[in-house]
Image 1 (cartoon, rainbow over the protein chains, first blue to last red):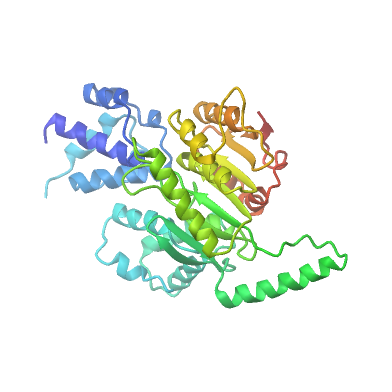
Image 2: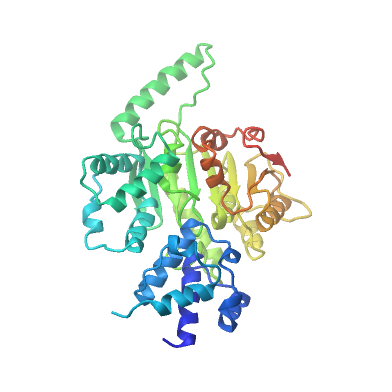
Amino acid sequence: MTSQGMELILIEAITAGKHNFPLNDQLASAILQDANEIKLSGLNFDSLAWMEFCISIELNTGVELTPDHLEKFETLADVAAWIKSWPES
Amino acid sequence: MTLDYLAAARGLRTQNQFNRLHIDLGRIITPLEFSDLVAQDRDGKLPSQAGSWLHHLQHSSPTLANAPQPYVATTISERMTWYSIPQEKRYISTMLTQRLTQSDSRGLNVGIKSQKPVLIAFCGMANRIMLPLPIVLQALPAFEWDILKITRTPNGGYFRPGSETKDMEDLMIEIRRVLDRMDKSDITCIGTSGGGSPALLAALRLNARRCISICGNLSDACIPIISELSGQPIRSEDPHNGSSPEILYLHGEHHDTDRKNAQKMRSFFNGKIMSIPNVSGHNPLNTILKQGRFNSEFNALMHGSLNLSEKWNGRDA
């Protein structure tokens, strides 16, 4: 998976968390520039939004990521690392 | 009316797959269907993932499983669902109401109207009234309300950019048609988040008794359209000041965007703002639910006890 591909997956997951309301350009470009800088807490998601986020990740990558896993993560880069470390079937 | 959970869950394996199913069910099932699922779970017929979900909702709304409100859903269109009690029970309710109304005419002040009010609920972007539907319905006694739930368009908000006027007009015509068919004129509107603006428009257009916007927003593009469609010029320097509807804007105290949106809406439509202390998120109803106060007080709020400020720990802003 290319770096660009990963960022698009993250953008799509955040969009799903926002119930398909388009991301503002500032957040989208920030993700494209450096996911390390995006803190999960800064997304202001509620529990439903995090479920949608995880469902989107699984649908697009096959990687199982649940809201319980996210409790250990701080930034979007941690999510990306989890996805990259998932064994390919 | 039995919900075939097992068919819907067939082939599901991961937690996310079950979460998808439960989120979707949480948007549509009634308290009766929920209660039926709990019974199936008690009999060991459902997978463990279902049990966790059901227990979570039961914990939030303790009467949901054992004393479910007897709403039955009727699909009106893709975006509209009508919730009411079944016909035979409605007949009993009507008879009771008529008898009480007759008593009223003899001088007893029982305070019951001859027609049940309808609550028109405009969902937010998550297609919920901020909470799972069975929890919301359980807080609204079915003998007191009929409910028309309206969701956004499948691929966007309520109104398509560039087509807002037509979309709003079409939606209002469709709602009017439903209300006429159901012979309803006592109307309360509620809109959560992105449903706030359409709820306001509907309240003005349908001459509603009251409108409650919970963390609603009002885009600049919407203002001239609401003015045009409501037939009332809406200006911030001369806010709408009619006797109807009574309007309440509810928001969490520490959510700056929601507070500003409430102030902006009030600048155009007047009404009262209620700020819920110590709520920083966009979902004050969830906070009230966690505090165990939702079931007892949401209904009073919908009926117009807008002086709930003390109970809700709210204060006028």
